[in-house]
Image 1 (cartoon, rainbow, N blue to C red):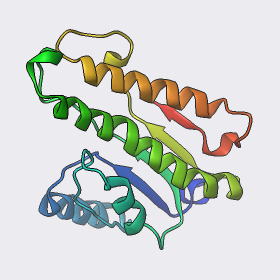
Image 2: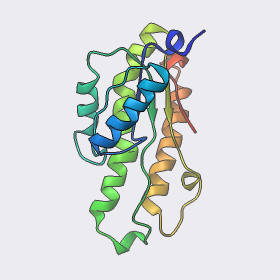
Image 3: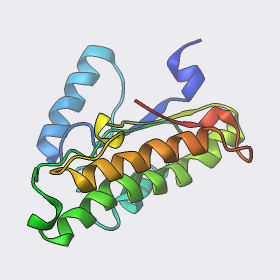
Image 4: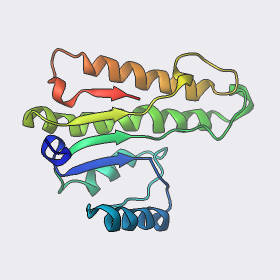
Length: 165
């Protein structure tokens, strides 16, 4: 069975590359030239409120069957109290709110079709806290628990189950 047959013709990959449209367009052109796959790019800051709504709007006409959420590094390697609370809040938005909102949007259609998949990239930081990555570690722990809980949810089909890497 081909990837497209199993997961449908479109995959949504959030956060994997860049927030700059020119960089995304360059990678999309390379993917197209090497594989023939069609792409659609959207440059967005995933830490901003409304990020998931923008992704949902940009993919409204697509049958997304595979969601990959690969975002959330912490460029502010410092103790929690050394920075403004807005830095930690942005981390929670990017690593907790947006993936949860995207799963809630894309998963029902996957479950209804009986095919699809969701992957939330995690981090070893989610397994144990660190003094300079408190919010990051906590947000990745959220992703891990969220993925495990939805994967085992009796109310939903396993065909859409979130998983983590």
